[in-house]
Image (tube, rainbow, N blue to C red; front, side, top):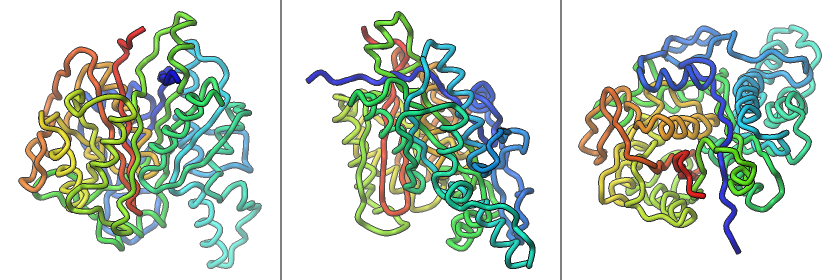
Length: 398
């Protein structure tokens, strides 16, 4: 049976680096630090975060589906839908959205009100506070009437959501799918990562020898997915192609990856098999690269084991922080932008890797990629679940 190829025909993004794809692209090309002490959360913790500005959270007419994560996702989803429409995509008939917090911010507000003997006002957990609240908001606002699914697998959530959306295209269940996801910061997230001693007052420096840990961020990233054959038949040009998807499970530890990188290696190998590619076909790795001691060394060893040709490596998290459930979606958008600019973007925070991280990092100014490059984007999560996505350039074969 002929494999259905998946085209990317729209992209949308919002993060601490700015609202919109153009702002994200400019930040990747000319990176600078955007982290600061959190301003929206009344927490007595010495920690910096990558916050999105209040005005970047979308406004809407659906008060019964309100949550910060939903509004952040809606901001990126609206841009993605508009971008897809301008590229000839029709009405969206599927939504696959990944998040790790969902409506948790709303639940926190209600709990704090009750603890302080305040009336929390009208509240419907099933609509406002549940994990699916952002999906319901985006689907209603954009009029998506096909399948709507919420994926919550911690830091692989939106990468897995893209994988699911692609499977709907390949199975003929949908014609145009909005896939990705996002997370807004909340008390639970910040406090939990502080309790795990994974974050603090120093900015993250992925793969650096003196990396202090991760820096939390917030944001959302989405893709419009369609059948490549149908896009070409209509005389349209895709932005890029999703060539392959790979998943694996560490079966090792709740929060720590295996130090030999075996789980990450298995996910990347699975993605290569799905794409029909060999390791030598990969020109660039958009790494998960959280900036923690264990994650960076484990991922670096996996990359070193799999690729003999030492592809250039970068992590977006030195720029925008770790956006948790939104990381895979934003890094997918960053990968598409790297293809569009034929550039591997700078690994902000370190241009020389820790000896424990045997990879070649992209230094200041970025690195020019060859014609028609192929990029692999990694997402790894608590619970030991891993997802790798492979993207090809806009010059796809016909």
